[in-house]
Length: 444
Ligand code: GUN
Ligand code: FE
Image 1 (cartoon, rainbow, N blue to C red):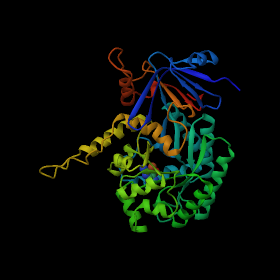
Image 2: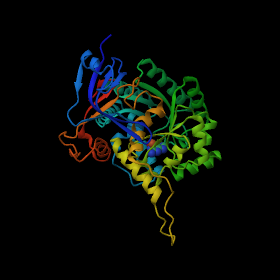
Image 3: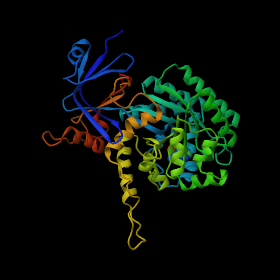
Image 4: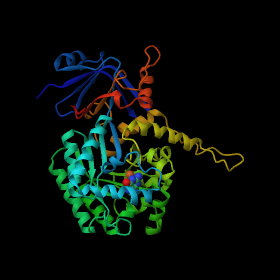
């Protein structure tokens, strides 16, 4: 067995919601499987032994090591569309822009160029774990899994199911329900055949409108038998929310539950229109929500009631929702999550003479947003990452305030370590991320 490799420096994380912890002069030791075997301060027993036992790498002066970001909602094929078509309603955006783009992934050369660019971009942005929607295509979705494996990203990937001819165009639809189900099963087998814990398959009904009831039924059954993660969109926009009520006579939370699609391994994207009753069901099933504040603003004119959901015991992480959200840099979603919560808390209805302000007690602070982007997301996925604790995997990013092209402005003698962390989360840019590790391996 190889001796553990150790990293010496300043480590900051959010070990629980609302609380951050900064560990100075700390030695984090990682074994050959990427597992953290010790986290030692200079005053701890074993520190001196660990300093001499294996290779020790000192982080640059003034640098911060943070857990890697966990992006709970990424549409991998939409990466080329980031920053485009943000002005149209969701249903128009899907039909006119997004489905035609996704249809192009029948072309493997196109898929290879886009997926390689995406995974490189996300890793250099510090996203060490991503939960991906791919497309309906078998070959291109396998290619995404291969690329994540090759580049070292932790990834959960779903072949998207879209078999409903009423909502999906001829150019972009599974050939039949059977085909959609078999395609999902084949993809699960392919990923499991890769024999690597870092890559997992996900049962992925795009959303209720794109799927027939037969497909939803079959996917619920399949998720149960394969014990896979499940991802879908729910309660996202007025149109989508109304559509499910009209088709099924109930909310999409209730509907997904009837199809067996709400489990401990389910991640629902958005959730803007969740009722308190819906939240109770999610909490009871152990299902999580990917909070996507950027795309909720552009496509739903809505704010996910994050604080209420957390208070109800729903597990929540953050999602960029590329390309509904026009940024692949998860700190932009951290910033938007705080911003959106403030608008929900303080928004004013100007039609009233004495306007009541927003929904009281809805705001979160940067500590909670940081938690959601790291340990919160890891918790939703039940992955042992997201914090510097013995037994977790070392998925981490190095933030160098002095990096060339960086945007951080920290001042010795003025900023405390925690001030520095806050400034990182609000003002750092991609250039400040100078190294990225997944499972103890440097990937950037
Ligand atoms: N609902 C169904 N598909 C999508 C998608 O690609 N993006 C978003 N934001 N919502 C969706
Ligand atoms: Fe989405």
